[in-house]
Image (cartoon, rainbow, N blue to C red):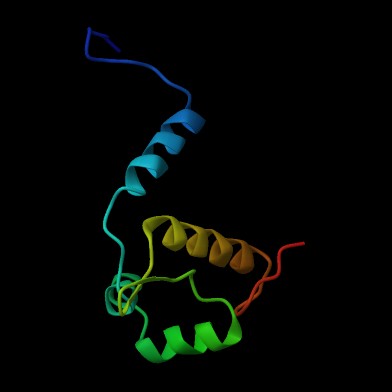
Length: 93
């Protein structure tokens, strides 16, 4: 690989941290846009909420929002649950 003055090399972990930090500055989701983005129904979202495994929510005025960080953490939890063979709520050990 030929490097020029515009190319840098960084560790994968640092690259992933920078990507996550940049994503945190993106727009938050409404419940509807979260459901649309994750390809789930609103009914499933509210079931997740009742059962305690929905993403963290925040209020902005009268609107519920889900931040990019909360969405990423929810996905990580779901990935860990899937790896453990759990289909619903996942309690970390």
